Amino acid sequence: MLVGPVRGIAIAGGGVAWPARVVDNVAALRTVVRDLDDERVAFMAKEGVADALGIERRAWAHVPGTPFDHATEETTATLAVRAARAALADAGVGDVPLVICATATPPRMTSSIAAFVGAELGMRAACIDIRTGCSGGLVALLTASLYLAAGTTRVLVIGSETFSKIIPKASKVAAVTLGDGAAAVVVERRDEDEGAITGFMETDGALGVLATAPGALPPTHDEIDRGAYELAGEPDELAAVVPGKYAEAIQAVLRRTDTSAAEIDLFVPHQTTRPLIEAVAEKAGIAREKIFTNVAEHANVGSAALLGALVEARAAGRVPKRKRVLMAVVGGGMTWASAILET
Amino acid sequence: MATREEVYAQLRSILIIDFSVTPEKIGEEATFRGQMGLDSLDTVDLIYLLKKTFRLENVRTHDFRDLHTMRQVVDFLVAHGKE
Image (cartoon, rainbow over all chains, first blue to last red; front, top):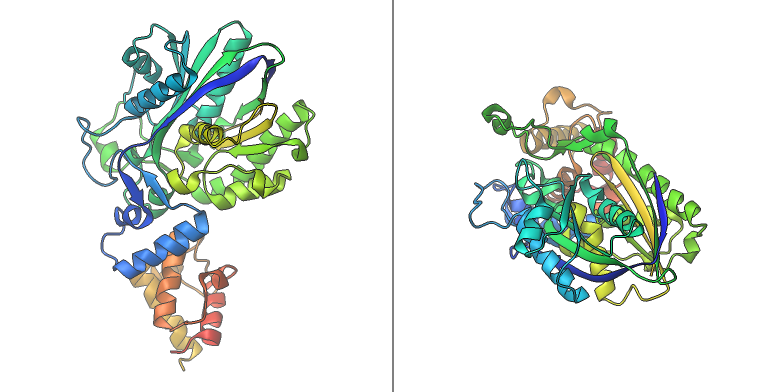
């Protein structure tokens, strides 16, 4: 499905929130491999994670493999609130008519995180949650653009995750590649010539089994005991499918906007691993210096990853006026999406 | 200098003891990532153990990048190992 172009749209502010517990690669591996000697774990952390994946650290609300402490640990909702506050402050606005929050790791079986954010911020806004895996942040941004096109004045868009609570107890790869965090942007209507967004989003539900927590809700003791609420899937099959979906999404939005790869000023992809990000950019014909990545600092934070990168790129001065920012993501579901933001 | 058979036996032992690979999955053409079930970090961990066991002082992790089967790794260890 193509979205837009929606003209007269701009990002008015952005914010991010990370849990206080910052975990380096050795500490992340130690949650899975407790009995290996220090030199062996340090080798894996450097050669297998920092050098091979480009990830140095991540922040976790919860330490995988330990009991949950819901009274004190941050949740997807509390992180969303912090990012939302920061985005509203950055935009200089106190209220919005619509809040859209994306997540793959909700803190409740029912109820809306967006509604929790609205309540915490004292707003009576319309509140909607979006569940499209890691694609959620960009899908939420594109959804917001459709509301703006329909007349809504301003939308608070949030992506938030606490992957630390679904990391499988035995998976070193999941422990080092997944992080927690939230990111939010305030998007608003502007004059027709001030900015635009054009997007593409698609889903193949048959591929959802490649990355999912398969346990049925409500939880059963048996399902909990067999780890069915932890992230599972088929990582090798996932790795084989994902690059093609990125290419498909990027080509769709380039065609729609009649834009060449050379005309893209900045590429803000979903933050997964450095090799995948660079391979996607190379396949699309985008020069490496145009990539913005913060995966080294945060690892993959799901629906917050792309929005967080966009917010940090903006804060770093990488998103000035009159530029074309390409965004692309593939996530659970399986979902894939892309957008070109003209600033 | 260890024979090829001795190198194979040592690698097989590492896979069984350190990575819980069942013996029936191990063979000359068996792949580490596919048939033996190692993930990307297991393979880096395996390289660490091979560097220690076979004293591969001037070999880098990158040098193993295109080695996917038991046969390929055993041949590499025979050519480069000092044990």
